[in-house]
Image (tube, rainbow, N blue to C red):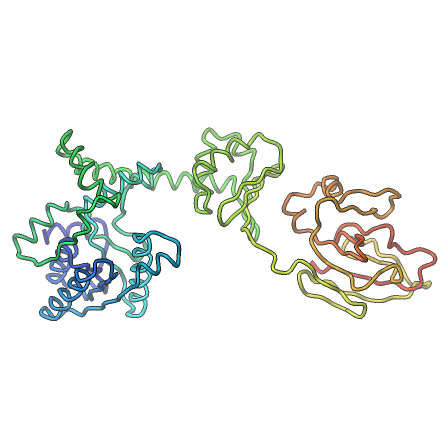
Length: 441
């Protein structure tokens, strides 16, 4: 077993001899075998143990067992106790998820504080196969079917080459002490159901099922690398970024033989599910304006792009500009200057400047985002136009419309900032005082 471990570490290039390690040890057979093996190797390591206080005296017994073992063998031990049930209720998540979040958060904090290189867990071949089946039952792509990877960032799983039976046999042969977790025999957890009922049935069909599934996972792991490289190559052709916005070129996706796959691989990290991506794919040929939401992002179908933006709430919706104000910096930068309408005054045609009749304005002016149904009288026109129609005429994209700021006076639109002022506030021969408002881009 020790030689197999060393060969696996070398083959997968998991560790170097100088790496300093934190071993996550529960006290069960798998992690105690890992601890025993690494005690025979040259790595500098410490042990980290979590007491989740979920099994009463049994949980405390695991902690006592490890304290005694590490004390006897001169191994440095770190223990953290968690109020797991309270955390689960507070976060609105399952006990299993709460325990996972708590332990990994602490493990990485410990890694950082010790300035060690890697966290090691005792996941083995059976865990890999169980994960494949769980992912398959949920619906997954190549990533899920490749199971558990031997290394992910600072997390290393060095025992994936060994089955649970291999580890139990080693523990018995070498007389490695370990604790039995009674919850592993309960069928209330999905993984235990697969472990104790589904896998034995599959092994009656083919006794080598777990070995073959692990081989398939290894093949799929390399397939995933090829797949991801191809996806990245395609994304360089249709995906672009500008600030917080991402743009997905619709024409490119329409021309693709596998647009739904490209959409899913691009959008899954932004919280879009497979079912939602299927709807987005169907919207490729729909009219612009359709909107899709994940918990964190919004995707809008524009004329030529799907536009992806974070979902952000405006904490302040209105900004007031008093009569004596000369500059504002939030939410946009505007400078204000009072001028006299005499022979030296020249009306500016710059779209970033609005020259307004000061005496026609009611202060404070209000700066805010536009709302549906609002209208104004564009400069040079006698009739009124809805802001929404003006945006369409100017070929505004949906984000451009949503990010447009409007200046109001007495509830009337004064200026679509940076685009068009209202005719009712224009400079005339009767104008005596002018206020020049300039947008800084």
